[in-house]
Length: 151
Image 1: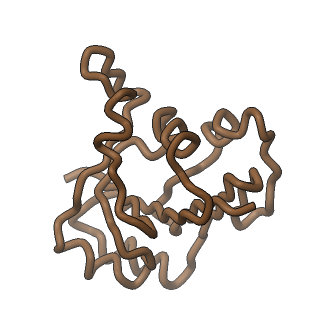
Image 2: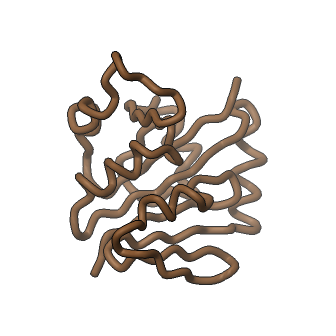
Image 3: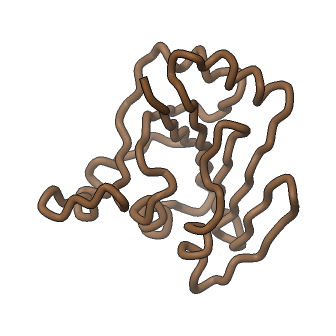
């Protein structure tokens, strides 16, 4: 099995309908594609020690341009998303344990245009924040990425 990405949210999402216009099957581009699907209940207990949001989805392309389009268009003030990636599904215990012992969280506030990781806090350009984020680590196995929209 390969890697698996998760997107957890503070509210239920209607992503399939909302991003349908961007994920048009006639113009499918795997370098830009973003998708989200309901996750198996199996993963809820596994992710419980590191994910705090109540709605968990399996995702693909959380570091792709269409994900940033989604954030820009549909993320509401007060929303919180958590992103996490397990590099090999069958070896998830190691990944979860590493995050619990030595977390390397990332915090992105798209309301204030900031990106924060273990190396510092960086101000993003208000007009080019999505492009700037595309050059940074967004989802990782080393910690949970929290994306918030607060002023």
